[in-house]
Amino acid sequence: MSFREGEFILLVYEDKRYLKRLTKDFSLNVGKDVIRFTDIVDKPPGSSYRGFCLLKPTLEDIILLGFERKTQIVYPKDSFYIAFKMLVNRDSRVLEFGTGSGAFTAVLSHLANEVWTYEARAEFYSRALKNWEKFGLCKNVKAFHMDFLQAELEESFFDGAFVDVKDPNPYIEKVWKVLRPGAILASLLPTANQLSSVINKLKEGFCSVEVLEILHRYYKTNPERIRPKDTMVGHTGYVLFARKRI
Image 1 (spheres, rainbow, N blue to C red):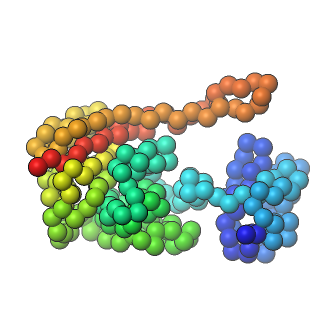
Image 2 (image 1 turned 120 degrees about the vertical axis):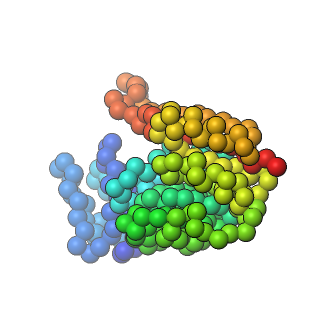
Image 3 (image 1 turned 135 degrees about the vertical axis):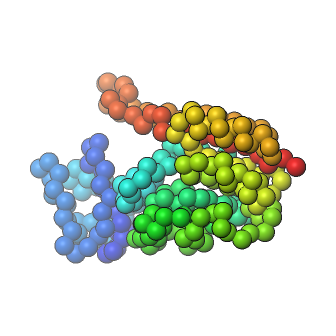
């Protein structure tokens, strides 16, 4: 399918990446090269124009380059692995709280049958809805502006849960109730003190507790000088997994 007006496009120019919406007044100047709406529309993805490569954006591109956020997101280096470890698939009904900017919700939505997400703060809830609407994402998401502790849910309702709040401990008992036996609870915790506290709490109803961190480094792709890039996304948090036991 060729690019059409109103679509988002990823423009790659050397080592720079730009996520833009195609409008009739669109133009982008990089270095000595200029690209305009008429240079892109009706061309297929993968086309080249001057120094630009024209591509369909991935979900990672949309999250990192397109999502508005004022809180730290769950970076793709963590989120895709977490979703994989949670066994999320097209038959899954998955729980998430808090929603934040909606970045991890978008990852879960891409993989799951249904996602239920809860956000207590109005500004975060509103921002997540705007991000999803802007990019046409999360059609299978049920979003609630409320604290998860206030939610009325059946027991053993979810196939997995992702907990993204400052202090998970007050929520652990309720998460245990709404998870199916053997289902996975996942969380991303920024400090070791929080991690230690949550691990102690999980002893009451969970097993197979795992903790890890993911470091993500890109390499420069000059074939004559292949080496790590000067910056990397290092420690963003401790990734925790545990499984409900009965």
